[in-house]
Image 1 (tube, rainbow, N blue to C red):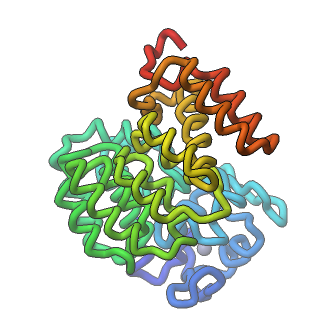
Image 2 (spheres, rainbow, N blue to C red):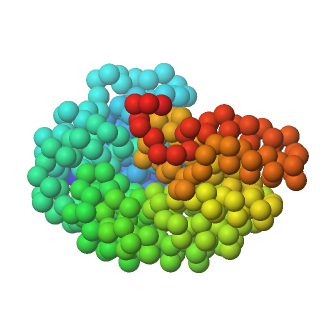
Length: 339
Ligand SMILES: [Zn+2]
């Protein structure tokens, strides 16, 4: 598969000489194509195997190759002209590539997104071989897609066995690694406190605008330090991100009362957090359901919420409180079968 990189063959069809450098997606690293394949690339009408080779040599997230234009099997989904002999050039499937680790890596990096079937294929190989190969692939390229793919695989397939590789990847932040990929890998592969410390140290240095879009990556640590951080940094507009983060970070009833008594904006976060805890149970997302600690009897909860409602009678507040009381039974520890 790497033959055309070293030869002068077209990177898409791998049969005709490359006569064109096509810079449409990456001026620094243009596609090297024959005239026919360049035409099909521009017309969004590559055959599946041609799409596969370009995704492999470049990146499936490149604009001309991305999933608005091609399905997972490389079929052109929005061609600007009629497809020619597409069925004669099928792309390989997962089952074609799953038996050999090198083939499986090739297949994996052509994917727009990874899924359980791909993780299962990786898990069928010995963990030591997988770790060795992914470590070498991580180091082999500065390509951000390669590196983030390695982290996604170790997060889902290796866990704690890949801790050293994840520590290595932190050295590439922020130049070559995204915060989100590192946060997920840290949750999956590092000791709990180390993972949280590394992420929180970076998170709290970000501008608030960037923190808002990255709060979701802090959910999985389920760490009460995020509640202190919310108290210190809350700023309007109070979007649901704040309450969702609180609902995942180990809210206590004592803290709910404190936030309600302090009024807006913390009272809004308190209500959102209660609704977030109930919603996680209601939707069966058990990993995300962190019960309210120290939850009192429903009468006490209702008394506190109605007392707050008397000071803040906005219709949205009333609706939020009604929703919480209706789902009071979902705020505490749950037996999954009972819900
Ligand atoms: Zn070609």
